[in-house]
Length: 194
Image 1 (cartoon, rainbow, N blue to C red):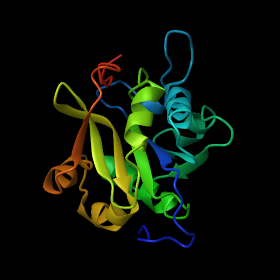
Image 2: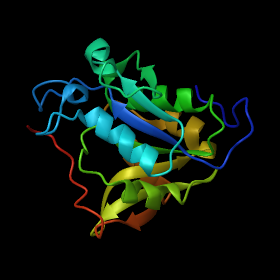
Image 3: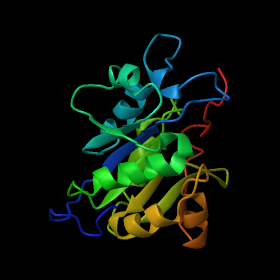
Image 4: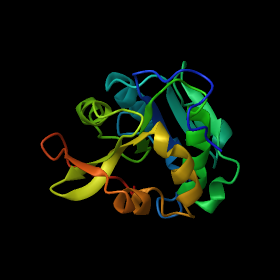
């Protein structure tokens, strides 16, 4: 379970969190193993976007095909293994928040691995909201999307609230998270099929 305050003093730089543990049933395999047309792994693109957008450290949550996917994660990135990954995104999010609690980060910027076109500028826009009590999500012409920024003060309650494959969206809605428009930066589209 994540700590509300962690063992280290809270810093000013948010951590980045890539959720890449799923089996990708609709996709035809784990998205953590997917690459773009030039052969660049999606997980590498996700780590780059978070790093370039101002996140440090960057954590990648793996589950399905974790050994193979781990070889695609850039050096210097923390790999987190989600024990109950087959339960859905909730297990990945809990594992990521627990790992983030050991860092001094005041917040995490969360993205799924299936947003390979995510520009660092969208991460920067959300990361600028990072604080202990932050709760915000990128919106695309009003529709909710990623990245999402979650302040440390919410980690315990969110970890307890997430269920199966619903993720953080119900929690964000219930707590009136700030919508940060990002449609000027990119489409916000994730990739559910090849």
